[in-house]
Image (cartoon, rainbow, N blue to C red):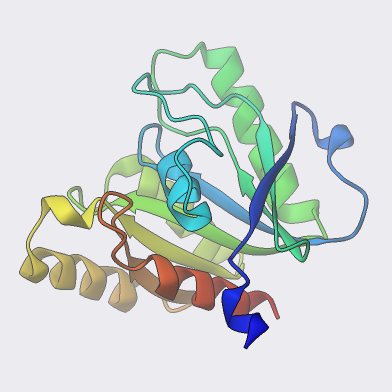
Length: 196
């Protein structure tokens, strides 16, 4: 009976600014990536059932580090800097792009990549570039369609179908809403299943 009382526990571990600083404890990692302001921090707060575990900002490009969150002492969620924010300097965008690629290609602890895509916008250039790269490199990844409370069920289904037909290496498309909690439990179980 006690097992049913144990909550899904997420705690903030630390922020890292270089690949060399990343944890060396061997725990599995699940990366959350997406365009600036797609809702990565809000989603982490929803998964944790807290409002303040990850800092949410209305300013695009706020996250500028690899932010690690410990999940049940079993694995890490990694909140990564958003891509596609044009007001950042070209040097900074190129630096992040290089770090992303090195992390995705060389990080042995990385077991799953969750690409957050705003459900209201289909096939934006930056999203397509990332999804195409993951598909070409046969990574283990899923698409998390965010902000589904802002569109109809018909639009959600259409967006989901497009992604599933286009990307055969995608391990699933999970529609979620951080605002009302739809899809949060499904995402938790999907992540757990894919990294175990």
